[in-house]
Image (cartoon, rainbow, N blue to C red; front, side):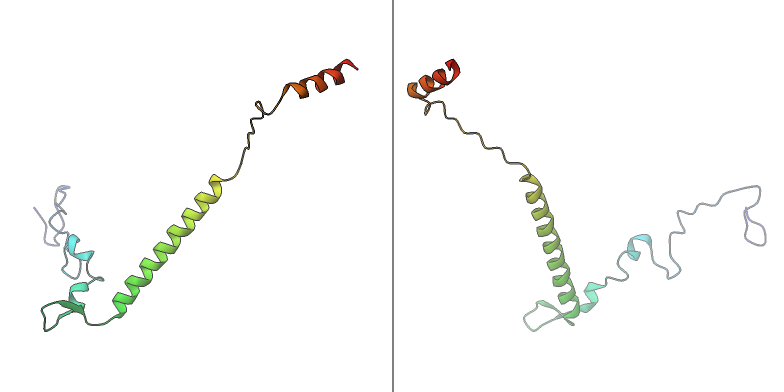
Length: 111
């Protein structure tokens, strides 16, 4: 129940779920598409295919794709650079060590 000014009486709270419309009369799901009206920039050619009227939107989309590709390549390079931080080289010379070297080692210890 409302008074003359339209305010709720007795602390009643009005349901705002029904009033999701914006000042422009747009619903919540429509607001996401107000700036991106890509369907308005299309025109049907003689073969029935849809073509963009102005190419600025197409160029802008290509520019954004190139930026994303460059950013992902830079991130990949940083990851690869971080993976090769330490390099351990292990050389197994157990077969190369012969009986002759053991004798020389034993002589050095005995002296």
